[in-house]
Image 1: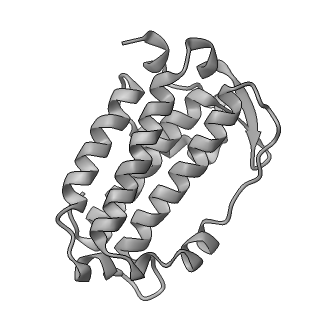
Image 2: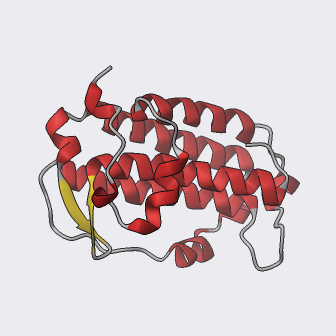
Image 3: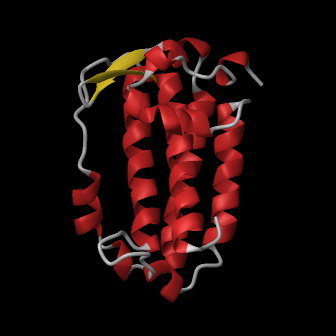
Length: 177
């Protein structure tokens, strides 16, 4: 285990809107956390049936399937940013509209097992990326959505974002996770 993977990002390394995500992640090796959380998510997602995946806790809210798809899509965006910055490309990266993504993705038409498999594949790629980074890469920064962010912060934000949504699925949807 390498020390750079255990260093929690400083508040200056990410936009303040991500502070709750970073705070939600337990101390320790972020790559090990991403791996373990991915395995735990895969286990409870495997139990979802079609009805549970389509459940919405309010009419205007995303279904559980849309939340799963959102977590996968957002993880792809965050890790793309991390890859660019880790490789020394500090070209500013645009933001994205998560509501547009969810509206056109068609997650509700997919089988829960397919969504779970996709999320597991995305998480495996996330773990592989962050596990491969040299210590210096974790220190690199770039600009995403008009704000500076470090590679280290993106790893923690990725983990915390998933935790945030799984907590909502447990508390508001009353489903596993």
